Image 1 (cartoon, helix red, strand yellow):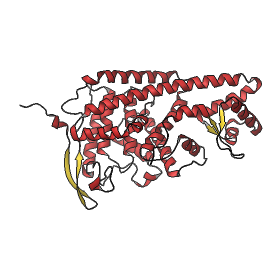
Image 2 (cartoon, one colour):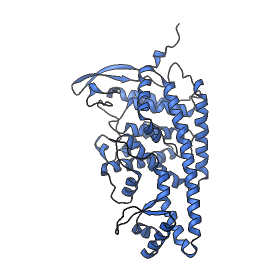
Image 3 (cartoon, rainbow, N blue to C red):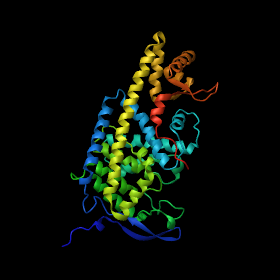
Length: 392
């Protein structure tokens, strides 16, 4: 009897019609791939990725304020993931929006990013409350992800009941057509079984890479599939115990290599070449984890350096240290906001801001006399690396 053929990894095409056009939609085979993956050539990369994740997880455990690091890092990930989908928000826009200040881009753009932050927080709370990584969890996250902004009218929290397509102005010009609506739930049920299956032959990172591609291929929602598919990588690593905190986000890597990313997704579908995708994915995990660890080190060093500068102020150090602590979670701030949050007088905050500007810790960003905003410059610079909006 002949053994399995590489063609067994390929999906099938089914005829369907949408918007008056007859097209072929792609239906992927269930995971894991068959014939089984050949991970031997990937072992070096796999080890590097696992070690990088371990160092990142360890760094998170020694940070003086893990919640603070997560607070800002999640916002960076939300921003990058939404930029891949076409928003033009910057990190400063998001921070202004969250502080009830006016961002410099359309409100829909920054609302979309803000919903991503909420979706991540909601999903992690559900996981920690004992809800497994499941179709129910995915739907709940999606409902939060599309709560406002451009996707709010595209059935938040509901798997699609109509045909969608990726790329192209019409179905016949699409770069890719995912399964027809009547096959979405069967595909997702297979995916849920794979998530919960005992697969000792598949390291968790490899499993996360397979999950991401399969979800993107099924494309089960009318909007938000890319953002949610990227979140699922981190959720799986947390659910499987590889990370104690959600501190791995691949959007910066995927933003930098987005053309290769799209090509490799299609290569899996057309050629069953999971190994090429996994090589790219493991490189991304390793590079991202190493970058996040280095950023955490730089932030810790910056906070310590600036604290030492402030302590040298003498009698003025008390209020300055309190403002410095506030700036760690609100690195873009007005005197009015600082006054309200710290319960200090307006003149005291004004004097304290001047001290921090003289020390090179704060910089004024508006050039105005009224309604001025001050940025914790070097901190924002570390957080903002790679977050420049993509050209339209």
